Every structure is written in structure tokens, then in C-alpha cells.
Amino acid sequence: MTPRSLPAVVVLAAVALGAAVALGGCGNDEGEHARPATSPPATGSPVATPTAADSPTADRGVPASSGAPPAPVVPPAGDAPAVQEPTERRPASPPPVVLPRRPAGAPGARQVVDAFRAAGLAVPNPRDRSVDCGPDGLGLGCSEVVATDAVTVYVFPDETSAGDIAQTWSGQSYRRGAVVLNYLEARTPAAARARYERVLAGLS
Image (cartoon, rainbow, N blue to C red; front, side):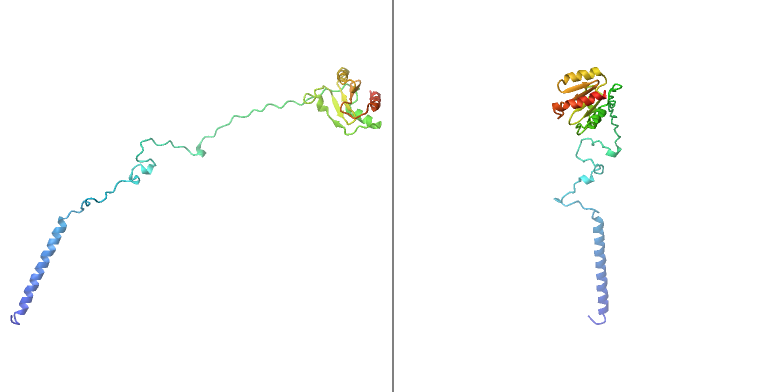
């Protein structure tokens, strides 16, 4: 090969190389067009299964595998209607006990005790116990009662009632008109009782 023919050989080699490259590129394009867009999964590869989150009932709170009807919706406690309780009817309070009045001219129980004190007789710890006259007490039907540690003074609405109770307390009492002296709960010696009785006799 002469130096003059060398450029012609180089040109032929370059033309042949370009043709080969062009043919290779066409083959790749045809192969790519012939290959399917998606290939099936290889044999033995895991297949994705639907989960509870994919179920159409998942968003509504109902299990996908449950065939039972949904539970009833319970409204909040604040929405429940108020239940009106029946009105409690209390019995009317009983009227106050009205004691019978002492007869005109009879001294009051407090007046008798004051007379004993004025006469120098002992009447320690005086206390009004007129409640014993009514049904909440002893139910004696008296009008007034004043008790002391020495003697208890009862005043009745009439002499008949006073005489009946004095007979019941026979030996431990003294009656003058509608007033009865009782010594059952007293500490007055028998010898000193006559002094109380004389003072009471002077009042009626």
C-alpha cells in the first residue's frame, strides 16, 4: 500500500463502522417495541392480597368479614331527654297542741312556785314541763306544769280532773281546787310538805 492510497482506506473503514453502528441501533429499537409494557410476575413471587384497610366498609367502622347488622347508635348523654321525677308530697305538719285553759280564779303553776319561794320554801331548779300535759307528753290533760327539785305543781282545767289525778297519786300528792302538788319526783321530806300545802291553801 502506497502512502497515496492510505487516505482512501481510512475513509472506507469509517464508512463501514458507521453502517454497523446504525444497524445495531435499529435492532435495539425493534426489540424495545416488541417487549410488552408490563411483564407478568415471575412464578413463585408473592401476590398482594387486599387488607381490611382496602375494604369499602373500613371507613364506616364495620368489619369486612362480619355479617351482623351494625350496632345501634347511642346518642350522647347530653342529648337524652330529661326525666321528670314525681313531686314528693310531704304530709302536712300537725297543728300545734293547744292546752286547755286553767279555770278562772285558779292560780297559775308559776304563781304557786313564786309563792313558795316568797314563803322561804325551797324550790330549786324550776322548769316548765307543760308539754307533759299534751299527747306528745304524758297526756294528762292539764293546763300547766312547773317542776322543781322539791315539788311539782300541776294546774288542771277543772277540779274534777284535778281530783282524779290526785287520787291516782294518793299518798304522794295534795289537791286544792284545780291545783295538785306532786311529790313523786321531789326530795321534800314528809314533815316539810305541810308547809307547801298551807301556802297553796292561802292562794285559793
